[in-house]
Length: 579
Image 1 (cartoon, rainbow, N blue to C red):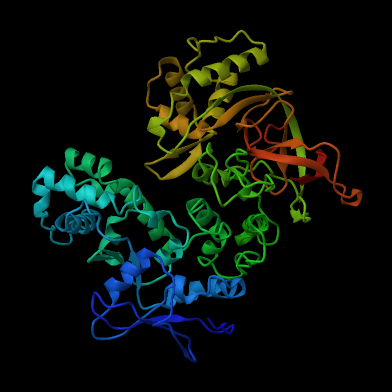
Image 2 (tube, rainbow, N blue to C red; image 1 turned 180 degrees about the horizontal axis):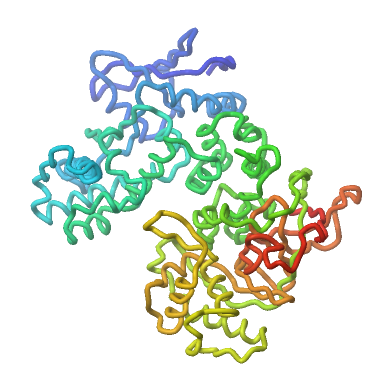
């Protein structure tokens, strides 16, 4: 295959033919064409099937297929062409999402009913959300029988998030988000993005299913996987309006890629080139670890923090179990190849991050600097961890399946009471309903001093009424504050007490002796572990630390001087080197 000039890209001409004829194609650039027919070219079975579906018996079709139009053996060409994919997808006439052939166990009628169901959900939601401005759509006939409805849901599940690999590959992200005209193709059936877009609620995917009976709803969620499907489609809908690099990294971290570097490069096309300057070069000569380091640095310097830097990416649980994470990757670096087995709910951490201001008053003139070995950052030492409680360990994202946090919380309370050396009730049976003093401090810790108020759609600082709900739950295991709410806040966190008596929630890997720091460019505190003797040149004047994770420390989340007992200008600032 002849090399491309910098300004060129190939496209595929699918030559006409009948169903059983051999596939014949041309590869063309803007100046000449390359004959492919008659020459061996290995393609995947899935690509063969969709090309057979798309081929016309009477005329040629112009297509762009990355598997055939980019020389996958030429890394220089790959780097250049991957940078063009944003332009290719954004300017194409139409993008086809191939969901595969209909499963042998699914009848053609059942597959058709599955697509009809999505169109019906969209039409119903438009009527509900717009106050019946349009005629109420006619209920599909197959929904009159639960047997036929269940069959349609089983069919839908085969192309949904639970079973279809398309939803889990990283290169499909650009394919879904960038084109203006998007068509989902499943066997002989097709469904346009415009037809199902009204079914996708920005507030919550389940809202679109309110018109259904309880049995239909349970079937759609349990058998059809509709909730997960609509949720993933909602991500696409939001991304079409534009996402920050932080949001896209949370949404599509750990997507499947044959080359792990593509877990970064496939996302760069969602943003303009100057947004992620290190990563958008798509340099395949770099090793995987350097690509992840560059991406994390791009996140630190993205958006309005391009000049000063913001350590927000360090809340994405970079530290992973040795069996899960990428070997030899710096602990502060976001591993895009995999997600932690025990994450701390990155979406919640990200939303909370902007409400905290632990670094209030600290100068941000000395921006974070990558030395080639470590991340050099200024910060202030708060204290060291002395006492550790049990971790509240959960897997997955479904809070209703989390273990009850009540017993774990009560064990934390016993440690806290003992450290305070106050004769506070271990069983929490006599906690005053006002929840003042140490009780209020403990309850605020459990809530992260923030709660989401759905009526006004805002996060606000915890008030006394919410603290009383915590006390009620700890007393009885019941109340308005559900175990799911606490579970999401405490997920995979470990309670700790510092030498000076501060209480906090940190990474599961936190150990006694770990230090709590407020870094000048981070809005939340972090736990760090002394690395031992300095390994960096003395002129850098840095102290070596291993990054452990972000943490919540009661009393300092809104500034080190928030308690009125300290003056930020009097605090000693030091330069650290994070590994």
